[in-house]
Image (tube, rainbow, N blue to C red):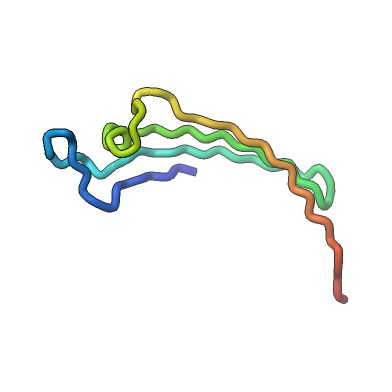
Length: 83
């Protein structure tokens, strides 16, 4: 799932020149697997491709990688039910 980010307002560089409002793109990959009827394992990987405008707003270096991985186990027991 791609996400595109843009600044909601004008961003100026150090010389007060208007910068592009495009902040970057994030790509998310997720998967899940039902281990049992009420237990699901999920995992994901995200990669952010930032721009010079994002670097101007948040600091850091737009050329460095920004990625992360996550893992989650969800347990959803059925406690009550009506027929």
